[in-house]
Image (cartoon, rainbow over all chains, first blue to last red; front, side, top):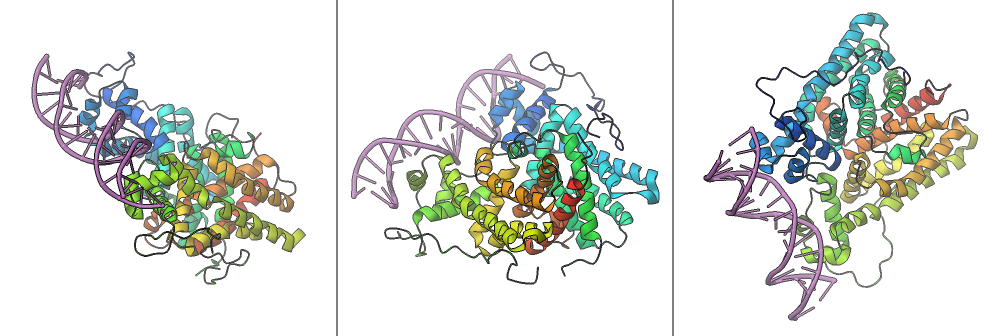
Length: 245
Length: 245
DNA sequence: GTCTATAAGATGATAGAC
DNA sequence: GTCTATCATCTTATAGAC
């Protein structure tokens, strides 16, 4: 699929049309159309994804957004409120789309579902958003990746918004692998989750390790490999009786 | 292996005997024997692994180490110097052990090497250190995990110290999968690396997702699953001609 | 909604006594 | 090696004018 533009299972995601906003859109810095509020979120999203919560100051956010620091507090209260707002802004659409994609796939294929097809449906939306949703989505993907890897931060938030989609995925995997045990499925998913997280971060380490042979930003290819790798991994781990316990 | 105490391929790692220190060991806070320098590193390692570089202040490090803030600067200069010192302290032993483990395995098995055996040798040392090397090693494992997931931090350092071991691993995989192409191997490793990183972080997300069925801290089990998952994944991805390019 | 001004405190780092 | 004292700066956050 690396060379094709249209995803097979997920509808081509692009920049969201956005929910109909009420009232007049206030002017932004460069004459760019957009809420002040949104431009603050954009700036914060960018910076948080690169330096983490503590590595970003309100002043930096305000400067990058082209607004006054007081405005950041006006809209979001304390710094943590800003972070949460950034995190939540795209969480619903991100996960709704994944759930819809796998449900659509399950409905279309029924008993003919394959792990490859299911993972394709589940993984492609975030990759497509990161690739074609504009810089904000790429920053957001990196932020999710970093938050997922962090022990203290966003634990509850991640679970609240992201776990339901994962639970639905595991339900559908059970239909494909009826004899799989829950422990095996969760541990297998854990392996997939790590791969997904590292990929969305686009840290560039793979580029260096492979001497440029692979590019972290090539999410199409990353997705192709991940689908096949994970499908085989799930089969190996959930196939027969577990080795432990 | 979850129930056995002795690792199969790696020598049982425990708290390092430590290189012979010259001079008298200065007293520490609670009468505990240990360098002031080391106790600063221990405190910093703990805090950095939980809150990241910017989330930790020199004052907090000094307080947890039971020393004065000025001493932190005396030993490590700027804050970044402290972070690097923490990171480097265990990097060599960590990677040397992995390389020795896979080399030993290759020498013992020769043409009979399996992916499972090789990954077992490669993955078990860090898991064993994290489990039985004392709290410092657990903190360090989490720090490595977090650093690996971070785009801006420790990129060069990670590559400098950790890539050689990975390159050696890939060399040996090539002996098992002679027809595998480099691109495939690197992307496959990327999937394994993500799983490893997420596991070492012990974020607790899996616990919540699985309603307590799986525990993040159960690195024995995590390793068992990872070995099988990754071996199958590599075979699937490196088996025949790649689907892309 | 947006700005100025500023409070109130924390931060990294250093100089210098002992 | 270890401590006290301190600097210069940056931090989040708010009050209040417009």
